[in-house]
Length: 433
Image 1 (tube, rainbow, N blue to C red):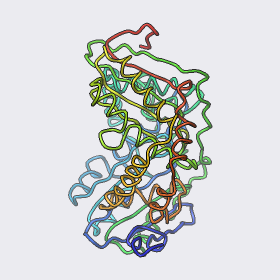
Image 2 (image 1 turned 90 degrees about the horizontal axis):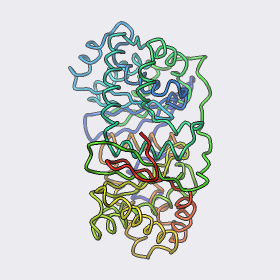
Image 3 (image 1 turned 30 degrees about the vertical axis):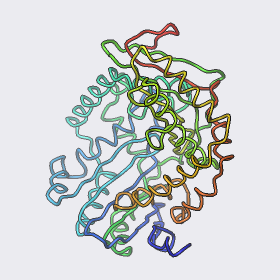
Image 4 (image 1 turned 60 degrees about the vertical axis):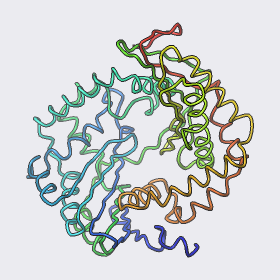
């Protein structure tokens, strides 16, 4: 580790403690300020629910802060707001995520509140119904969002109904209507527990003080019902390319979502795929796709690509918003750029620019306690090692042009790509309503 990396979070300045009940605590003391950030996760995401109860995990997450123990909604939120603190919980496919911030002197309040809502939620019926109404309203609104509908159709075609990635983490109108207070209580009782839980604390707090507070609040937590951690199954790519059409009446724009099954975060070629994606549709004005489709040809309002790279085989996607008359031209132009990327190595300049971009933006991510906490959480969650950030520059510059080409060829196969278009025009290829 070089001297220039000494200030970067690493194994020498991150205190890692594993509690007897399986909770992993990581503390990074940052005295340059008066605040503290808490970030955490536990294995209770939508991967643990059935298709018939799609959205249950996220429903539980959104209801945790409506009442816990002897405290009602007003008690919980007033205690936080009166001290300028913030705490939120969100459901994802693999995990439930926890995020909070406060003055360092209020860390105890933050952890006591987190402990209460995670361990003792009461799911008041009036709030359960209020949240149901909010979720149904959001789903109904999303049904008229062409960008949402295109992405949903792409995902459902890319992954079979037997795969958890086929379903969104937030459910659908039918499943949300069916979920009851008892369902929320049963899911929490079974899936919430300390096994595999991660807590990261970053800010003006000594590691020992933070560890004592976590031990006081979470050290006695046990749940014998908590199941083993689930991993997403492998996903087979479609046998042939597919095109899905979603008719959304009353719209003047069409949205395109194109996807293939991409690398998981722990894949050996994940960083190479990230760099290849940056060349394709991220760097500068959204890479080659942005330049060709949006700037040069004027076919799109926006156009970009993204490699998700989560705990399982998330998609590598290309997205664009276009005039309905330009859908086919835009798709053809995007496919042309993909073909170029998988046919030839990128230039020396492209590689150098994107390597510089990746390493140059790292310090920006570490400017805040929240950014540091997020980075440390990712290192622990994905098993990257606590020196990952310190070694990041070297990892990026070890990747060559041949690595980018190999990653692009491995994943960006047009014969396995799903293309979904949502907009006002019904296409000849058929319509998904």
